[in-house]
Image 1 (cartoon, rainbow, N blue to C red):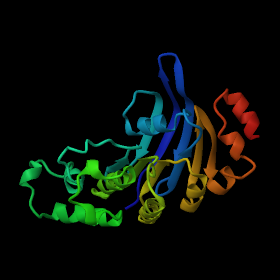
Image 2 (cartoon, helix red, strand yellow; image 1 turned 90 degrees about the horizontal axis):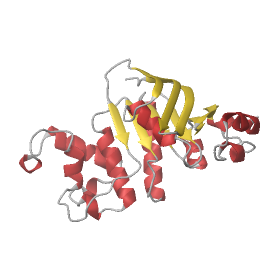
Image 3 (tube, one colour; image 1 turned 90 degrees about the vertical axis):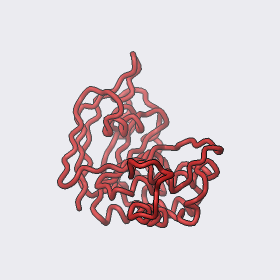
Image 4 (cartoon, rainbow, N blue to C red; image 1 turned 60 degrees about the vertical axis):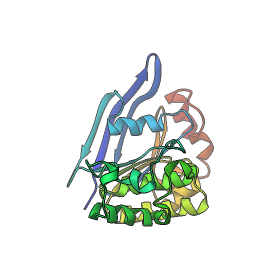
Length: 242
């Protein structure tokens, strides 16, 4: 199963008079890992939300699905009330059944959910309350839920937020595995070393698209400082990168 290709054309996003994204055009090839990087406030998450259709924008986003339409999404973080009696298994299964959770039995869905939790190293904690987990553990559970439908497109917003080193390695291994299966992965990430380990294509966004290409070229040591400076203007950024 090959994931979709994504084409973004002249995408512009404004809130009142505040320009978040200004004419961003980029192509994300099918079956590859694509990482969006850039300074804080540069519009990385807004670009993901636009691709997901979660925010209004000007321009075009075209997703070409060669097979089934299925998206897995992992937000930057989620907050769970510690007293809420929602277990890890309950949460993973929330989108899998129309029956009340307290009617749930040991079904094929339950087995599949446990398999995905195993992939992220959380199967042993399937009966723990979500609110009792650390932030990094919660991120692992969110990733397991995103994988449950075997999506052909994975969209990840800072997926390693709050994770310890073991969790980060689990995630990197899973992303690599997903790409080897032909899935398209589109992720926001801030860790240059981690992105290099993922062997990803990198798209630097700072209100506009600053640079795009294979990580060895884009994340060359001579470019790092200029790529992650805060936005001034498109012309100034282009001169700095050049």
